[in-house]
Image (tube, rainbow, N blue to C red; front, side, top):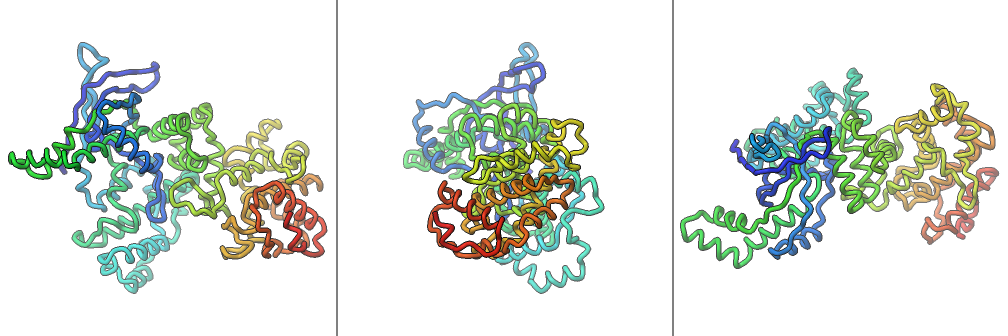
Length: 568
């Protein structure tokens, strides 16, 4: 495959004795665009990538392109980049002045890759990061769903995989696609990947598509398979990764493209063509002539954890991300082993790392009743999903044992339970002091998580309905049950019950038994009625009214409250 080579004179800066060197230089925006990748957190079909850049804002790109079209305008802050493929980047210091030298970047013309080649290469990159991925097997049901989607989008896939033949193949050759996504005999892989569901999911999405393409004759293989395209994968294959500055880079490229496509630009290209140049080359020459040089700071570090750390810290201090996207990026872009080296640094930088990990698990793990039902900040979130900040608040009641106030009241029952009954719990018996017990409890994967998951499963199974149009729908925030107000009321009232009955929790099973006692004689259809409130839920009058109605009914559940009682 053809290779391009770029060379730049650079200055070397090293901030501390233990920090990685920074190479400072400038390059044409159009050249940078050929060797840098921008791994965005985005949706491809129904799957998320494991990138960590925000998706591009087209309005901002237009503004920057207009800004860059004026040659006198400059942006002084450099693009921030880092190594992605160290084998393709080299630096040779000047023998006499080692603070200066030549940077060489080699990149293949990956635009000429087939989709199958791109899928295989990205899989190989992920396997380098998380070796246990190599032990994973393709889930038959998941493959079937992706194949169904591909059939609808590609005639060649439909012709090569008739539905009847695929069903016969799966029946006769079931061993090729085990029904479990994680090999149950691989304890190492299971232990490692249980906290890394997003990387595993993305990897399996890639592998499934690759397996489909491998079975097709090369001429029939499509360039788009169930939402995955070559362009969407190229950022993971470039030798350098852009940590910050994607809008500046692409705004500068767009400004050059706008000029090349203008009448003046086309006139210049015509002159080149008249002189014997090929039209494509003439257009490229005009484009290159207007591409501005952008300053770059290249960090000589290929560790993905450092890339995510730099991105989060730089962007959160400049243009803060919405909490859902910040939490998603911080907690799901790296494997567990990649996260550990930067976790403390993220905490010290004021990034809510532990909260992000805790909430991300609740949104993505199949153990959780909230899986797939919470906004992540990635484009395509449904408006009726629970907000990330709401789930963070709910998990904090269990994790921090604070925030368990009944609306309209002043007593924090979660905090009271922590002070009076928490210390004697067998769930934290490994701690020798209250402080140690609390640290054990509130760790991102501490006992709180199992307690919270079991509690909300009990609520979902008892009161919820999977029918998203039902008044008690679980997964739709327009319902009476699945919303910030009532989930908070239920959690706070549960701790009120534990406190009043002087109960501790010695096992996860204790959650189920105490919930049964707490909800004794309560009608399971409590939330399955049209309350005809006609008001926004999250306002003080509604919050306090619903809390009062629930607590009074729970303590004396002889008959359901009258519907009009829910309206303030």
